[in-house]
Length: 185
Ligand SMILES: Cc1cc2nc3c(=O)[nH]c(=O)nc-3n(C[C@H](O)[C@H](O)[C@H](O)COP(=O)(O)O)c2cc1C
Image (cartoon, rainbow, N blue to C red; front, side, top):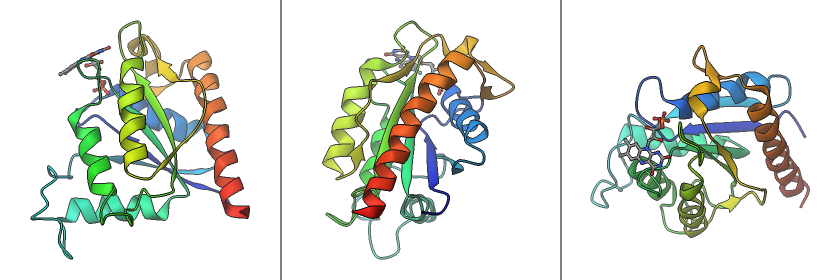
């Protein structure tokens, strides 16, 4: 197949987010292997079924189109209060609709979490996975990619730590494997 297209969604809205830096680092590291588009969720409003019409808000149109255009998704999320941040859940909710036809349905999706703390946001992994399954996505089966002490692993707005990058790229290769399997199914 041609070069796979990957959408790297950052689950944090803040300028200087480590989540966005991880997405940017992966984009650089995957140059020549996959076309990675980094997408932030700042323009996606809170889910409101009244707005989920044939003409949804622009930010939602953009999110859904970006997911639909990708062969696979890397969802980079922080952990908020031991769980999934509202911003990430909100994006999954928009991407899950229309019911059974959402852009994320059937999409191979790798979950990456991080934290400046020692747990790497690992407690967000299960709730993110559960929401993705509810939305009909295909979370990649791989040991948790949970990047601890992320503040020490990012330089110049990108994940640069070799060990963290190497481990995460192993998971990305599992994502690429799933994409290839689906393409030939
Ligand atoms: C509301 C809130 C809740 C948080 N809860 C957790 C938590 O449960 N575990 C954790 O490791 N860090 C927690 N943090 C710290 C985040 O990991 C840290 O702010 C991180 O930088 C957020 O990701 P970002 O850099 O991509 O914005 C929390 C931060 C906020 C603002």
